[in-house]
Length: 113
Length: 115
Image (cartoon, rainbow over all chains, first blue to last red; front, side, top):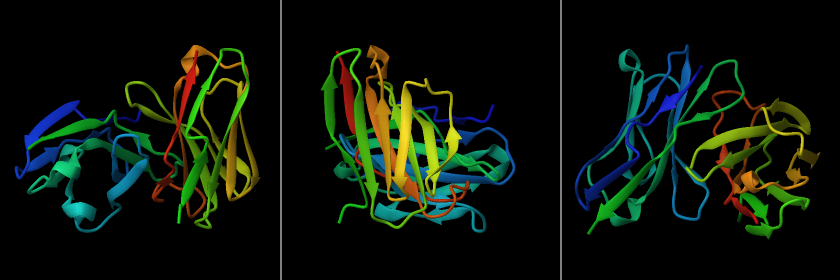
């Protein structure tokens, strides 16, 4: 079955430190990949997405993600984390010919002052 | 301006009751979705509608009935509520026909608690 894995349930980093959140998807042709952020008590906001082309994509709030087909990964990165980045991060994948996202289980980010 | 709005934001009710959650989008999108987020934060698609027609119906109990009076609205009616229905329900919309590559825009969620 098609699936998305976010191996890290919780991650804690200090403010100003770099961040990498991992996402792996099950093999499938032409994946469309997304990262969303959910702040406490809020809905989901799109950070960035990858469809094709340059495998390094830039998003909002200083985030970027790199698509690596050989590793079936789409990891999210930020060079310097701010306290306001504390939130839940969700990776999602959709496949050509389907009509739905498959979400990972999320990674909760805690930022230490 | 709110792009995707949901009412109510919180809903506390007794087992066995019937309740509805409303969703409206002012983005002019053609497709709308309902998701359920459980206590472990797992998000799963329930339904999607494109121009008032059902295109996704996951294995959801038939106590859940979506209704789309027009393409800007997708309401979720739940009959005979059960404890396991307690969750956060998110509405979302996308511009096209609901294809894989479309960006979905989410509402703020409705937190349902069944006692």
